[in-house]
Image (tube, rainbow, N blue to C red; front, side):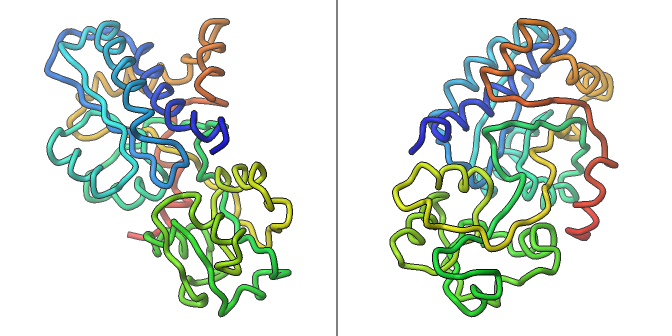
Amino acid sequence: MHRSARGAAAALAGALLLVLAVAAPRAAADEVDIIVLKEHGVGSATLAQPYLERFMALAAQQNGWAAAKGQYLTNRAAGVSFIKAHAPHYGILSLGAFLALRGPYHLEVVGRVASALVGGEQYFVVSKTAQDLAGCNGRTLASDHADDVRFVERVVARGAFKLGEFKLVPNQRPLQSIKQLLGGEVECALIDDAQLAELQHLQGGADVRVVWKSAKLPQMVVVAFPSAPAGERKTFQANLRHVCDGDDGEAACAEVGIRALDAAGAADYADVVSAYGG
């Protein structure tokens, strides 16, 4: 796996805790739990967790929290279990996970993270044999994104295709679809921008062409859960845009792959929320 892909999960974990570390101090309180749910990432949750734990200790110290605990997850079911068990205050969620969990868990958008390493901002159908999307119709199409049909068809494809139009080969590992395509096991694949970048570093990747691409989507969402007190939430949101200020902040953001980090609200995600539907 390319070096940038191996560092993606660690960069994301660092990004979240970098945000927390600059939030204004508050009086000591009960443990603050944080969830990072990055679905379909090419990085490793095992690699990311030590970074998360290291920064959680710093966040607790700088914010005056009695204790803080973070969890990096790549599986939505595991994320739901963590939310139910720990009632986290904040999270950074993949767009699909945010849209699915927004209603049931009353999530409030407080910010957005744009990272060169995260992925999920744009989706592509790629092939070695098809000349266009129609050429994949009725053919084998591999993807690890097929577990969320509603997100793919309503938000990603926006009517351009339905997964039922292909001979779907669902996968769980992010790079498995690419390897199947390169090996001739499938004729087409639905991948995201992180996977497309990884394809360029694999033997035979130059033979693969993009036959369809989605519009660019918002990247990961910074959310507050109902368990976060209103005052704490307001301060946290206000400080998001200042994380990368100054030489130290700029260097720290660059080290964890941050392009931009800012406060955001419901209006910033209204389009994808509408497309996903209630």
